[in-house]
Image (cartoon, rainbow over all chains, first blue to last red; front, side):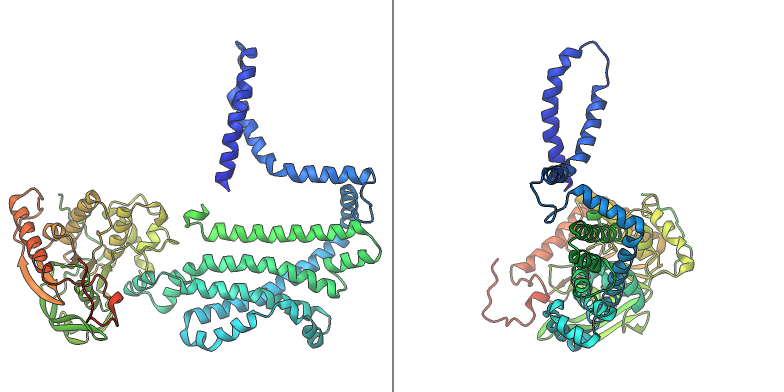
Length: 293
Length: 275
């Protein structure tokens, strides 16, 4: 990513220097820190560039809505979406739904992810546990979590437990598999070294095996976070009395497309936040790794 | 070279005496080491030379207690070796530093809490006193091996096993490391066992050089050159040439397979060495 932005910068610099050369003669004799201004404008340009396309799209959208080229029933104007978000936020309704949705997602992640981590550590570290459990887990893994919905409704009804169960099942597998492989891929030379340097079993685990598997476990976590929101959305649209899914389904009944869009955008924001959090964990825990510096 | 007497926190306990009698090791059908007899005196620096896959690393792993022999006797200070021992430390060909721990923590690995300060002291001895908080990924190959050396020495080992630790380094760094290892060996008085395929390295460091061929000791010679040894010296060069000739001489007749493990379970008949 940094390489491509370097290339952009280089291309821009070439373009800009041509421009500046043209204007340079006109300002000859007058002192002005052109160099500083130039590097500052590059920096600003670099920052703004990724936002250019979204900004353009939103502007086209707004103009089209204002002129009536797009029906408000199909797609409300960006400003009215903002307005709807503002109204919901002011009444406190928005926060209530976000809180409930995020709570469900995180609880599901804690249960499913925690189990995945624990079982992954177990099967990764102990051979007989792998022989006993792994083939069963791999079999269950191939069932899409959403295929369980009819069964889950029969088992748990349509209340919170059903949603938690679905999220837990979905986030379990990425964390389990990546923990398992992370542990199996720890450098055997390091483990041998640890043994010759007098580390106990627990010492080996704490200093060598767990840190060695961590980058892989975090990849699993990021996969799980993505799945978590997908399953949450589906689970909440099935039936709910609160949460972002409920907010959007309810709005649909009343043809409030702007509120539906607020809900969709909320999912996007929450997903992005979760990803930023996971990236932050990676940057902190893997700070020894040249790839994360 | 300056032979300063650095004293590590606890006084060096001296080297161990190693006694090997009729030692043998087989992996399945393949006999890697057989009928090996060897006695190493306390504080002696022994170099084991030989071609790859001829059993020298296996001998080192047996002495370390990483593997157990299939026949014969292996004694340290009169006690049978049954497994890993606290007074023995190994330096491997790769530094094997934990990339997720800083240099000082790598050296302090497995050290009791009370002795953690020794890590900084030993790192200063190997010339890395100012890199305590560096990540291993930021160090050069030579610096990583220095850290590995410090990590081995911080435990005040009485037997240091060196498994081609300088094989991957460039020639200049290797000569620096020779001087460092020689000095630390001199100061701490441990028994040292160096496996190498570099005859010059063996002549530069060892009190005694043995050659392992076809799984047993075929040559045993004392090096009576004064220390520190100069590579330009005529006697040094003569000895190096003689040992090198001896190592190569045997190669015309048979060749050792390159990797022990790769040949496990392969029937030997019908194979022809492509040299």
